[in-house]
Image 1 (cartoon, rainbow, N blue to C red):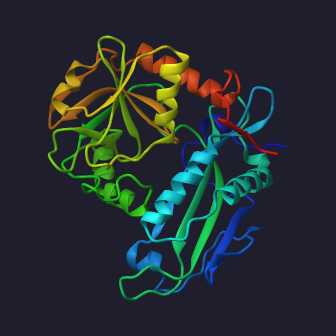
Image 2 (cartoon, rainbow, N blue to C red):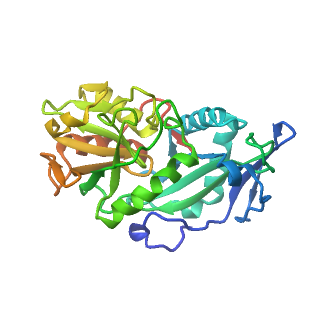
Image 3 (cartoon, rainbow, N blue to C red):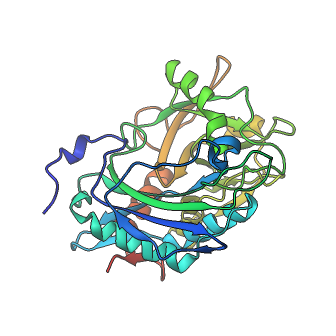
Length: 342
């Protein structure tokens, strides 16, 4: 039986659900892991996560489909990305098969929190890992916790497909050849100050330029960026210094556009001075799915897209409807994209 919530107005925030998954790494190996109702964590004051920010996370969602199944969208890619992140941060990778088992267990254990089909809400799944043993010297921790909780959420950006306003940030998101291409907690901590200021000034997000030359588009604080040019082609920015997070949603959009909708896709470096030539812009990620952008503010100078501030442009709309249709079971999915919770 579903929880008694106003599913269409729950917002994007944390609600405690019944059970979460916990596994601990000690003496060189992960334990079997358990489901627990305890949401509080007790660790030493000198834990690696507290001293040197040794932590990483992932984000994915569970959906109720049109025919009543509960599914996840490409969780195998989240498992692999978390492995890649852990290796970069000198953390013990949590095995991919166990990651998927944890997804199955925690979603099924909190089945009543999965929002109903058609509500616009989803069940957000947050896997994360952190150094839990004492560290004083600048070294990796010896012990870790892998945890996974779920919480029901509404759209990340208010208004769904209503276009947003974004601004060019004066700060850098990540260093060249740094950690911009992994999902480390420290990357997001660095963006919080600019995010708060952007929201205070009426902007949904910050657009970060490349940290080396500040002439090329990279991504926002919480999403990758896509554009549409005057010929209707999808333009996907790439980084010359490997500092853009490899978004699972972005990779899926590229496939949908190229293989399912017949849209030409060009993945390339995008100079900021050419953005005014594009007709549509979108922000894409697990939380946002695809959110249209109507204008970019560059220190008072506005770059407005032809799609406008009233509705999403035609290409962004087609991509959004197809991708969410795949996730919700109304559009046939490419093989291996949909993982059904047993």
